[in-house]
Length: 218
Image (tube, rainbow, N blue to C red; front, side):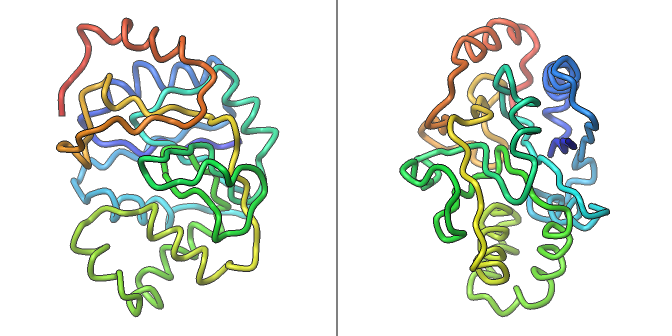
């Protein structure tokens, strides 16, 4: 199984000091870091990483502000097929009742952890700069420079709407931006955006202690 970490320079201290070592400890086969060193922004950097996918396999995409469950790699290997969402967050409008294999319309959409077939990733990037330009939300996507998760969900509905995806319960990751310096994309968000189900809360508490003295605020 392949893992791609979507990162920005301000979070590389956490990616290199915590995320990558944990992935290696759990035995991840291939770890890639897509660090937005050019400051392209969330959406552009995501689409560039999508375009760079190759082959017919799939990649587990995770963000640089998550903590992994203790059996992350094992569970990824067990579900390493198709589109799989490993994070559910009601604050991000995900419906926790839609767990398991569901229609594309009922897919969660938050990008803290998602498996995407590499062919779909390449197709999504091409779609955004082709057919996607006709979507009513296109100006908003481009103007914001964010919303990579919304772009991919719209692409799925339009191009693969009759297929199914898997919403994985319990979640594979928890969202811990509040521990490691705050949100890069939404610095003024007035609430936490935690996973609906995360069975390794002790790891969140341990992380809170271990990053003391290392946190770089965004």
